[in-house]
Image 1: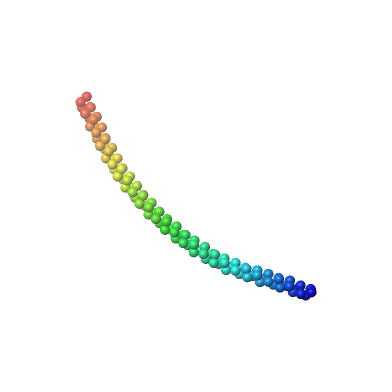
Image 2: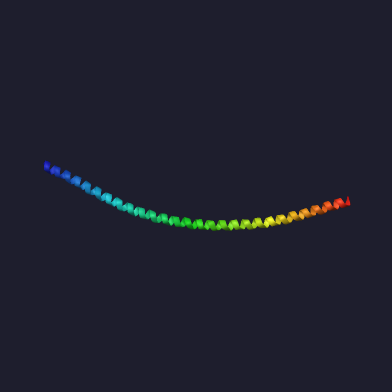
Length: 100
């Protein structure tokens, strides 16, 4: 009986060992597939982010260009207004000084 029980125990240990090795091999293969899937997904995500960043840069360039145009137009408009205002003040002072 001891030989029969002993052989059952050795079969149990052998089965556990083979199962553990098989489980480890399956886990390693699963990890490879997982890493590949993660790599592909991260590459797609990086491509998407690069596209969005490019669109954002283009929009920012357009906004900056429009802002520069707006400032240059307003700046020259302000210069025109200030020179006409100065001319008017000069004329009024000249009239007051000559007439008074």
